[in-house]
Length: 188
View: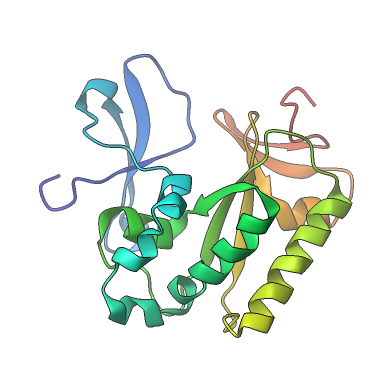
């Protein structure tokens, strides 16, 4: 842990004593699942805190040329007009939180969108269309793949999958993935 003291909270059953975490390796196949005691946590950084701090400006200027990082300010401008709570996840979020240069030129931009209240598939479609239009107009689209994960009290799901409509979406829960037609209610 001295080389990499950072971990990410992973989706798994949590107990009063232990928090499920993941340790990032230099490559995707070198990740490791573990748990830590809440007493051993020194600092916590949430995706929305990275946005509040505009953490991308803390990166060295040469990192701003990586497409997924270069898009962050335009994404922030868009979401600020919607008054939605969001933040970067994945390699971009990890780099912003830790300063470790893990984002690559081909990296996706993973976004976490907090959706405590139900959102219709039609409104999800509209939000995604407005976001991609905003990025295209700003010139920051650059072919970066966007993955917006909607987070509810029941778990998380792909906003694009929800926007497509249909009967069910895959909801990632602490007990594993389930197919549901209502990602705000885990029992369905």
